[in-house]
Length: 309
Image (tube, rainbow, N blue to C red):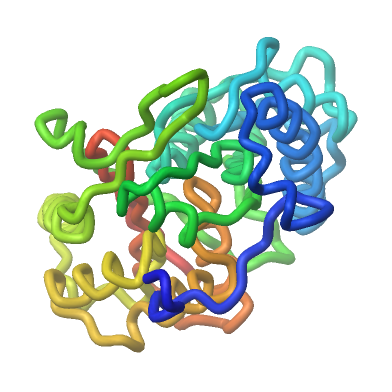
């Protein structure tokens, strides 16, 4: 991992100079999050709204997830201000779900649409992992320092498809929270800093629970693994992707989009699967049933079946 045999070639950090990454005093880290999280969320949200062809005033709700910093009032308010959303937009801040947060975010967005409360929901995940930096001699801490990058992802979920865009329909979702594995992957607070606990069991656990969630969803929808045409999996790391490949019986080509995002960005925590989805769409991946899955702290795992035209 430390000698670059880790599937990662480049990462992006919200810093003016790499020297700043070693400034891990609590006030400096909070300032880094306060400065960069709203900007990253704004840029991702603006890109999603422009792609949808909607005007910002059409957005009825915004759901923002993060685990690398804390603001009160929350990030959603910054996003509303920066994007010029309506003042009466419904706003939700989801905090503390780690790398798995994208799917709970989308499930809440989907519920708002299904309940008829909204026509268009903006879903945003933003992580400034350089604002949650911690350094000591623990192997998990050192691996974390080599693994995570900064970034934000966003998408617009709508009750009705936009005619000019590829149709991606949310059909079914499943979740699993294995509380007995909580200590395998989590943040702890030490000396006023967030310290990542990352154990050697994580790749095995991620693959095990990812398979359980997948099989539950397939069984309920009367599908098989061979029916999945595209795999949108959280690129937690090289060993995580290899464990998933082995556990689920995939080949390297099936996880090419996840591997590409890991190579170019590292692990972006909750924002990662938005990048994987974008990669699949950019490469005109085959239509049919797509499987979207995120997993992380908890140990939590989530998945959704998408019907893509």
